Amino acid sequence: MTSIKETIENGRTVLGIELGSTRIKAVLVDESHKPIASGDYEWENRLENGFWTYSLEDIWTGLRRSYLNLAADVLEKYGVQLKKIGAIGFSAMMHGYMAFDKGGQLLVPFRTWRNSTTGQAAETLTELFSYNIPQRWSIAHLYQAILNGEEHVKDITYITTLAGYIHWKLTGSKVIGIGDASGMFPIDPETKNYHPVMMRQFNELIADKNYPWQLQDILPEVLLAGENAGTLTEEGAAILDESGLLEAGIPLCGPEGDAGTGMAATNSVAQRTGNVSAGTSVFAMVVLERELKKVYPEIDMVTTPDGSLVGMVHANNCTSDLNAWVGLFKEFAESFGMDVDMNKLFGTLYNKAMEGDTDCGGLLSYGYLSGENITGIDDGRPLFVRSPKSRFNLANFMRSHLYTSLGALKIGMDILLKEENVAIDTIFGHGGLFKTKGVGQQILADAINTPVSVMETAGEGGPWGMALLASYMLYKEEGESLQDYLANKVFGENKGSELKPSEEGVDGFEVFINRYKQGIAIEQAASDYLI
Image 1 (tube, helix red, strand yellow):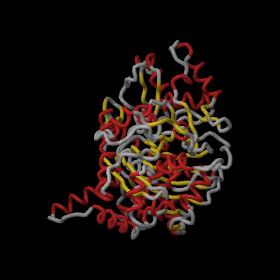
Image 2 (cartoon, one colour):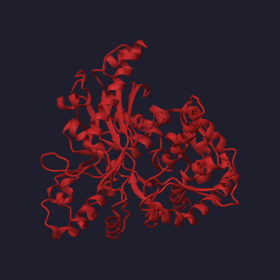
Image 3 (cartoon, one colour):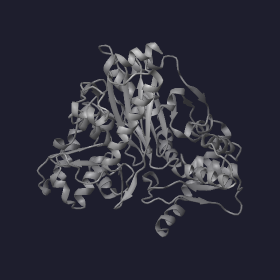
Image 4 (cartoon, one colour):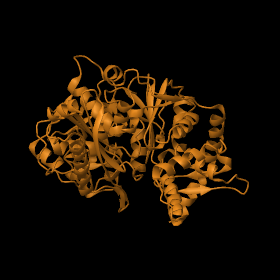
């Protein structure tokens, strides 16, 4: 306790803060990369004027509250005020669209990754570049705004991601980590910067608009893991810590996306490794040994925080509908006067699912609260379907919702594993789906027919991964790679607990996914006819 107190007082801690889709979390680590304090704040996006968004007030209130709760945790545990920090890193949901004018004012409300409103732009750019441009990418949002004739486009001087925005306002530096940048615009794996040929193609595509900017002028500068990305200004310190105790001058690493922090948090930045982050959305990141042979709309090509090529399968929907059903069971129990512990309820229902048939007994569900690009659904409708012949019981019901949370992901992963024959030695799982020991982990292993490991530290997730990236910037030795730093100085012999796929589970999931694909027409009809 005395040692940790001295570490805090002497400013030898490192702070990672991540703005996730439902929670903003801050994690403080010591020199051995161990989390010693944390603070969080729950928030939720809202659908306004056809766009999923968070207001600027939401962003700054949430950021301050998470830091305030962290500082309170430090004071309660160690009896010391948090004033000095060795390094800080910010991360957030990737992609989306934040466009600013010359005065630094947001031109239109923040458009998040969750929006499926850029289909025309994504399709045109994918064809132009011969490179998959998903709807959620920043460049797709920008080009769709151009196609829509939106008035604000001519006034743009800067576009960035949520993490890039936070970093800019607290440091004055318009920079971004390469992993987050790779979700804005394609990256050239050789130069580890925005792809120059595609940049030129885009500028030529919009030349007749006569905008007063070129694309390269309005994008943030790309940084690799380990590079210094500026320092916390006096104004930035006051914004982050309303108490006024936090000192300015703290070095920051490049802001990263939640995909990059997930890779850091699971030690999966090396080739043939990967991770699956499963929460509100779900995405798999597989570090590739080579470029894919074809362009697939289901596969994003992004990078690790140090610039290695990654195949990313991103599904917009994962556990939101599943969580809603658990909430319904809570309401049912409370109607009988029961005091319900949510952790116990989740654990009970998740474990009950493992008693069900491996093919879910003929049940089918779609947890689509929003559109799903992988399956071509523009506007989601959560849906549960069964036939008179289905084996309808609680175990199969819960199992079907766990399966469907990974349904769209499996479709994309099957392309990597079965069509491109991508080799994976290790997959790490992290996020809310894996909190109940052995359930989500086993279902994922069966879904992708690959061993899945979960680490105890994975519960800290992205903000801890962001703290690791900031620690790497602060403590790395000359020439030390991120891969070596994580393997030797952070994880050591910690390989996590592994579960292998079961033959019955793999076969059962294959039956389910075929039913899932055939039923997409039902989901589409629900979207078409259920207002």
